[in-house]
Image (cartoon, helix red, strand yellow):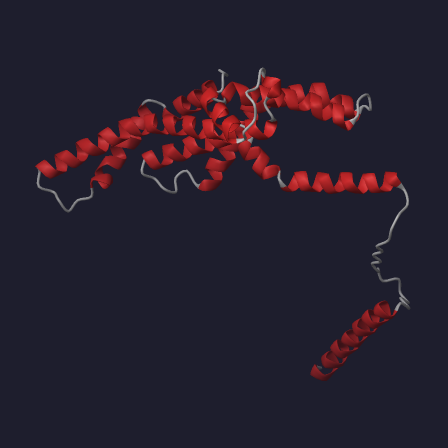
Length: 256
């Protein structure tokens, strides 16, 4: 019985090897799939233009995570949520996946009006063929720039205009997008840290009170964070902390 199994396995192995050899040699007797890649030149300008468009599209897709983080509300939201977790002294609760997921959906909620304008003014007309790519980009960037300008401080914008050594712009249309984006990111970081400080203050007071109480009772070896954690959680739950955080985040962008 063992010899027959060995013979059958050897026959299957030999058959598979012959199929592979046949496929590599080009005979392909049983219709095994083959892959043929050809690289050649072309004299058609349309073909070259299409290839360049595909290359640009792939480049934009590779930069999509950076664009999502830097030109949307994601940066401020994820930083504030991280401040909440650190203020509660819980490094892994909520988990990183929950924080990132919540930040993504809040970003979709905040950016929905802007993206709706982009869809109505640029994407749908382009898909219907009524405008070309350049016109679609010109129309689509307008709502995005309006959102960035609303959230950008004038001091940060003036800083990057000076750093770029550009003449003072007369209107917002004279501000290049490559100058507006870093100014917006800087403003977002400032706003996020300001909100984080306000979140930290009540929990810091609880830590100070608990540490003073333990010191007055002579309990030097007992970590204050171990005692203050239940009080901080109780305070956060009693004031409905998540609702306050979400409302503050959405309101900070001009919504709610």
